[in-house]
Image 1 (spheres, rainbow, N blue to C red):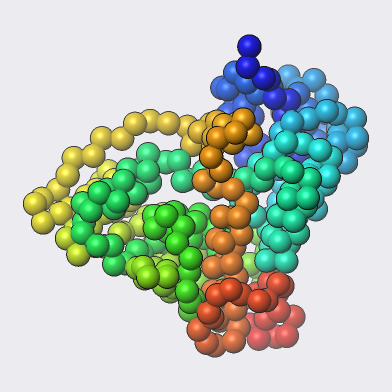
Image 2 (image 1 turned 180 degrees about the vertical axis):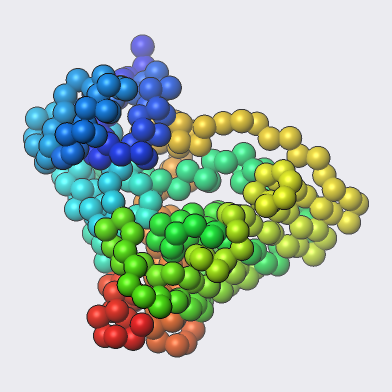
Length: 332
């Protein structure tokens, strides 16, 4: 019989249910405990998943439970400290929800803690497993639209860290995580706005270029086109992912439109299955912490470009959040 992995979850809100359902669908994982300070959430979660033990404090959970995998399903300001604590507790792997952190300094502390403890870190960019995403990448690699020249991604929901992280991460994934050379950006914050426990902007735009690769453009927030979608433009065609009108994947080439049926999968489950495979000696996870850090760097560079009014060449040296620096200095 294959090894069975004991799983704990920190935070029992809406996103935790998606994690719990993924673990329940995988034979080799068993959700045994959870930490949540809100008693009503603990009760509701227990009624659904019959957890063996609950804790108000996640550090108490680490002290009393022998766990293999931790899912961190809390607000972003807690991601860094909880990831570090989970790594130090001796778990094999950590699945931390997006965004990875609030700034690059926190992301680096998370990676360092996991490296020192030998824990594998995955960031919850599950859209890398969406069938339309995977098929689009294969089409690009197969030269279906010629040489890829540009990618436009947008999301009208929330802010750069909350949902823009998915946009930037998928754009990076479409080009096989090529390094980014430079970033230009602008953010708009006409009034105070807080979401998930941290200060955010209302609108953002970004433009960057990959090393020896295509340009990318992002629109995020209230003024972005409605929805969450991407257009990949090549020399011989266009791929639309999550097209606002039509199928989740539309491919138009010089020979006409391609019919692209998509397999139904659960991206959260696929994300965990690849994590298990990584633990057992398989290739590194497509959403491993290093890739999450690279996505975070682009997000922070968009903000830093807005703060300094210039192009930002990577690597980005600013460890703090440029948005917070702007707010504290009354620049925005």
